[in-house]
Length: 246
Image (cartoon, rainbow, N blue to C red; front, top):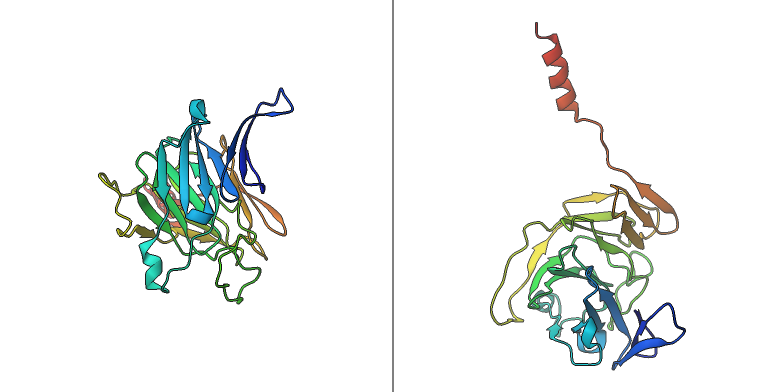
């Protein structure tokens, strides 16, 4: 599946040179599949909408339409600055939808009902080209698009930043919401659990190995990350004391 600058979403069969399906939209779309391959999502920035389709009913109306509005943005400026979506990805269980944005926040939505659950803050968005440059009135994509992803178990979200750091959020305790969607209810605002010193320039791409505990980040340089398996200093000291006890 591909989204194009000609404002279309195309479904491809690699065995044939032509697309199997075509979906026309009012602006350039962003697309993603869930891991089961049965549902796909299409984001349209022009209307701040996310459309969820059944793969078997590609040519019919979406079964769920989500409006992405953040009421906390009105606390910063009024009218609030629009959200510019640049990527989407489903969690491993298909329950959540991670929406990456070019600004200073990413969002997590309930993919079953469309509730806005969490706002991930604490990093610097890739909308601007360099630190210290003020944001423009109209939001833009910038270098954003591949800087945020889930870990394979969907317990954490990892994102790059304009300052080169790698932000990690713990999303294991997301709130649950039911009933009609109220766009005025603010999301849970999360700060990074940890922030890693990543690159000398912007960290523009972050990906996690689906099978092994290895992460890859890229900017002006490419970096591979492995977990630190060394024991904590206090644990080492306790083990040494145990060995000395007769």
